[in-house]
Image (cartoon, rainbow, N blue to C red):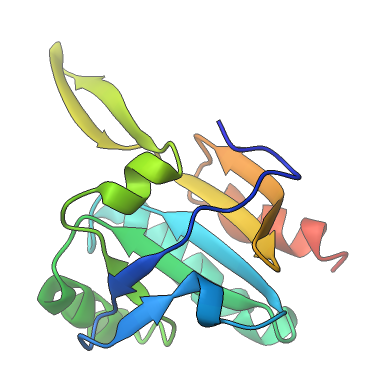
Length: 149
């Protein structure tokens, strides 16, 4: 698992508009990278909208969401809820595996592989905070707390 002080794995994925996004090219500011299982589901909507709602309180900190959804699904999700930040399409789960959030899960007795809802505060390629198994409601709260807000 990644922890504070770990080097953040690079991210090179298309966003909801099909434009390439690279973590390495984001400059020196802080970035919240959060992983969610599926766009436009109740928990993922609550998490993403919660972050959207605090965007004006976090200064220059950027927000980036990642899920296995296609850019087209991410675009619909962004448009439906006016999220306003990059939603990246990790359709092959390569980034999720590198960040160690691609896990064995179970629901109704069935096991499968999927995203473990997680969030990371990153600066200059280094993980400042790592929240695995984070709840949708705690994602914006933890970010504000980590930023001293």
